[in-house]
Image (cartoon, rainbow, N blue to C red; front, side, top):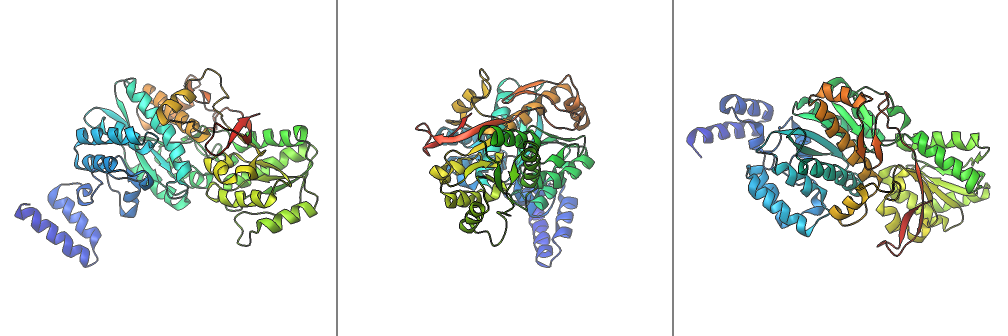
Length: 467
C-alpha cells in the first residue's frame, strides 16, 4: 500500500473512532475518487447506499443464504468480490455440481458471466431471515428464468443480472431495501416481495420512484390497484377463497366452519374476509370461536375443544408464512377430529414434513400445481435443473421474471417497462400459463384445489395432489 493511501485510511480510521464515520466516508470519496464498496469486504459487486442495509443486498460478492455455504461457493463469492469473474464462474459451477438445488449459486454464476458484457439488471427481495424455505422457493423461480433467458442469448443480446436482497418479510426492511433499489438507476425492476405486509409497505416507494415491482406471492386484496408500477403474478385472495369456500360447502358439505387466521398478517386477514363472504353466500355458517395464531395465549388443545363444543365440523388454517408452525400445532391437536382446509400459505415442504398424518386430507387452494397445465415444459425443466419438483412460489417467481424479460425486450427503461407490462399486446408464456396483467396490476388467474395425501414418491410420505 502506498503512503498516500495509508494516510487516507489513517484519517478515515481516526474519524470513525471519534464517531464521525459519515464524514470519514465522505472525505474518502472526495480525496480518493473510489467507491465506498472497496472499503467493505465482499461488497465490490454493488453500490453501498448506507448502513447495515448494504449487508442485505448482493450481486455475488457475499453469501446471503448461509445454510447453503460450501467451500467452492465461498471461493466463488470471494473471487466475485475481487472482480475475478472467471474464477468465480469456475468455483460456482463446481459448487452447483455438488449442490444443484442452490438458487443463490446459480444466480451468482449467471451474474459472474455477465460482468464483462452488456447486461440488464433486476433485483429480487426474499425473506431469507424470515422463512428460508420460502425465500429459496422464490429464488429458484428467478434463477431458472434468468438461466433460460441468458442461455437463449439474453434480451436483445444483453444478459440478465439479478441482485438478491433479504428483507426477512419485515415491512420496515422491505421499505429500506425498496429505497436502495429505487436509488440505484441500474436496477430496472424488482421481483418481490413475499408477504403482503412487506409488499404493501414497499409499494409506495416503488411507485414514487417509478420502479416496477412484481410480487410473486402477495395475495392481499388491497394490493390491487395500489399503483401503476405495482404488479403481481399470483391471483388475489378473492380467487382462492371463492374456490375453497365453494368446495367446502358444495363438495365437502360442511356448514359450521371454524377459522384460525393471523391478526398480524394482511394476507391472511384478507383471505379470511373473502372466505367468509363465500361461505355466507353459499348458505354456510362461520363458527363464532375466535382463533388467532399470532395471539400470545394461543393454545391449540383448548381451541380444538372450543371448536368442537360450539358445533364446528371443519377448520380453516390461515397463518402468516412465518407462523406455519402454529397452524401445524393446531392440526396436531386436532388429531383428525375436524376436517381441515387451508389458505395457499400452507403449500410448503414444512407442512408435509412436520404435519405428516396430522394434515392428511387437508384441502387448500393454490395458484399452480405441476400437473395443472399438461404439456407445459416448466415442471420438467424445473426437475431437471433442481433435482425435484418445485411449488407454486417458484412458478409465480419464474413468471414474474419472464414477464420482466419480455417487457424489457420492448423497452429497457423503467418507464418503458411499466408501459410494456400494461400493454394488452404483451403476452408471455410462463409456468402458470399466459402472463397478462389487468389495469390494476393483477394477474388473470384461477385457483387449483389440492389435497394432502399419502405418497410413496415424496420423502415425507405425503404430497399435495390435485383434486
